[in-house]
Length: 288
Image 1 (tube, helix red, strand yellow):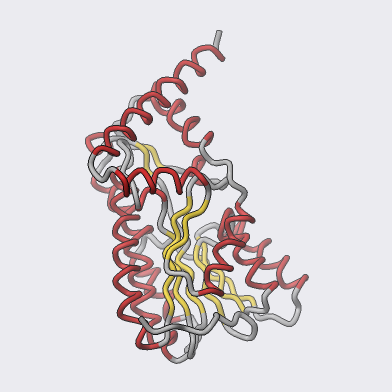
Image 2 (cartoon, rainbow, N blue to C red):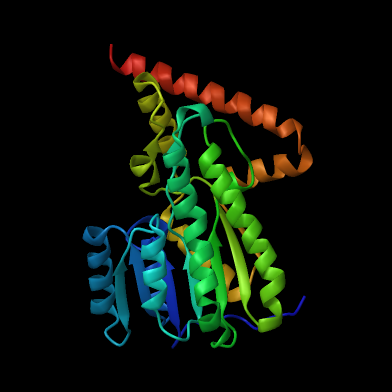
């Protein structure tokens, strides 16, 4: 495969979705520190505006554009694409939502919402912005998948489906876009300390008694600092890395999956069930 020169951040435009909090917010700060003009996209205007204001204050020489859009809405995604520059150095598809519940506990509408935000929106934006990336020699694409784009634990069918799909798209694009001098990095974060647990959707058929233990378990796994995750991503972009795993709780399961492609599923299922039971016992104890 064609060897690409290191990515140059300064003086180029970076488009970043999910920029209002978590990894996205920290990516925005890191990109600004490296001299990139920014287009920041998020559904949460209340959180997005302070991020942009901070960057404008700290880096007055940079252009910082904000776009508020619900990426679950196809028309909104298409509108975002029409408002972006004709040349783009970097596109980071970071926005994502989670949905907890077994397949039979989530509605089709909820499943589709997760697929629309986590997969359809990155696919549409990437497709629409390919000419802008091609017009900027040495450009780069980042798709933020997940640990759950590598393994598929019970209760995460929608999230896993969306992140496996994004991983597949990314790996195929890497081969296709190399001839245009465009690099592609697929990111698989483990438990990063973000708002994803508190903002996660809950399957409409999940019993109320299971909601809090599962949310508590999910939140407990999120321990890796978002700023460190963002820094690792930007370093991977600079080096044109094809694949980045972040945090030990992503690297361990990935290794297990490689060593035991079939048997690892039983181990992951058992560990998940045990963790949920433990979280449930902690909830009962706290109420006594």
